Image 1 (spheres, rainbow, N blue to C red):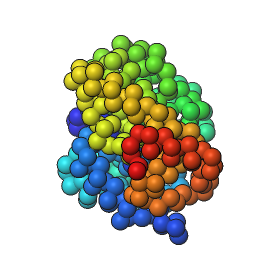
Image 2: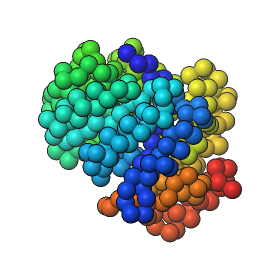
Image 3: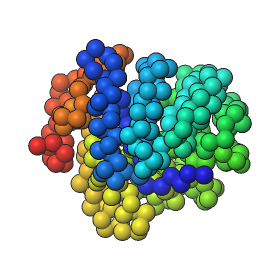
Length: 294
């Protein structure tokens, strides 16, 4: 199976003013990420505004990312639905795209399934494909937590490879690492990256690395190499910006920051819209203080 370790970017999906996917900006972003030393890329996650992409656009984003990456880093493609049959269909389709190394799939949102329902959902996906699956636990978005005991059951399936753990609970992260010491845990929260690694995790699927990929990758790598002095120095410098990138719903602040950097146009798809002016101004101040914009 592909080895996921270090910092992977949950890449944004740039849009043009008319709402179309901005393929040119996407290509430039992906190239910059790879050249900056990012360890892997995650197209079509939450940060990529996937719920508003058409099926054709979903494939376009994934295939464009694969083309630009050209095998230099692993690709973990998002394939999520709150209907299990649709999640299975998407997983099967994306697993057949050459260049996809693993599949990221989140717990069903809105339905609020039980632990058994979540287990059966991911089991159905795992039985339909042979590619490694990264289970995504993000209760703030889905309304349900994937309990460590349920994850332990899933980890017995041969291609349930990793978890993106975004519960925000350090105790849960520690419990998973203690229960499943050989299982791959990736933080789903930038600000908890070092805490997750100290507990036994091996990296992060990051929003912040859209904006400062080199430094986020260096911080994560330093922690994994037990160079905690360097890791902490980078962490403390960029922590205010990590936090500011979530002062409104993701990916509003990260796309605003990228627009301030001149890397994309600041366009979203409803129901997402531009940030409140006061919060955008606060984000800009923090980004300037961090040195990512001049």
